Image (tube, rainbow, N blue to C red; front, side, top):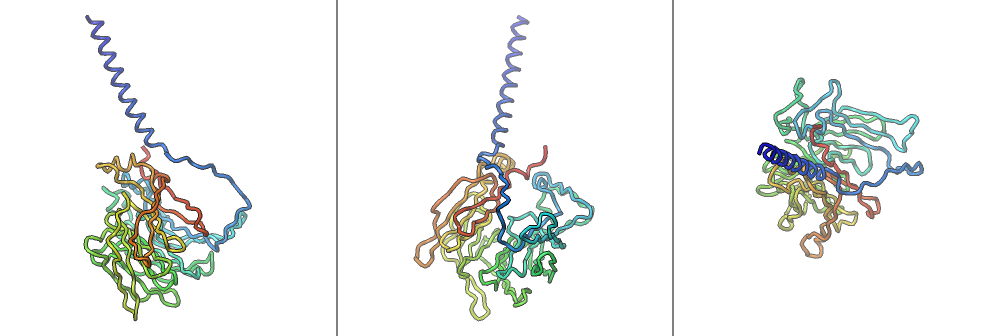
Length: 356
């Protein structure tokens, strides 16, 4: 009888261990990158045609602070904008950095460059925590940002700060009009969710117009100009809808008009971008809301998508989704090749998870 009981006990323990291993294996399988990763091949014949590479570096937090709110700041290191001259001299690269407040707590598009490549505009998003603060209860306790900085980059690796101006609470994203005359910036201020800044001839900030994009639209995080300069696309409603607006700038007065009801597109959208001809808006979906639990949303998120929305207002047709394709995990941003034939997504994957 004792042997029998012992056998049943052993079987129960083995079954429990097996179940635990099965759950663990399932969890680990969910963490594997589901999209095939292409090999990296060095090709010394490839050259960049740009004049400079601009890099905004946030020194106020590490990526895993999203998960545990531990900033892991390094004393003496501050936010910077770095300018790297191109073509790159691998023996003696021309690299220069200047202090410019910025933050990673936004999509990557926090820099706008003037069409003549003379000036860069950087929004702060979140500001620097006070000295001695290295941890919060929640990462959303990071202090609000308010600054928009203008940097002269005409001399390449000798950047110069022109001015830094308070423009409103949490400027999260910036876009410059095709003609270089206006900046469009998202703010976290009800009734003043969109800021349009007129730019002066020398690149300095001119008149500011604060606009509302409609009731319950304060949670809008990205805005992008149409190539014609006549329209704006705004990701809003907690990152799952896209609104298209016509913009009027007659006689110094600026106004916007919603073209149609915002289009419900995805699960958790990031930064959009128009194709060169303006006929399509492309926007990544990070799929960060597939479950009813925040932890599981970020731990077991599926592959993201890239979504194409047709936008041809002159035809009278309403905007609509025409294509979707699976991409990598957490596709925060993307780039279009100059001929618009290729798209490269930058995937955050799950680098926001704590190291344990």
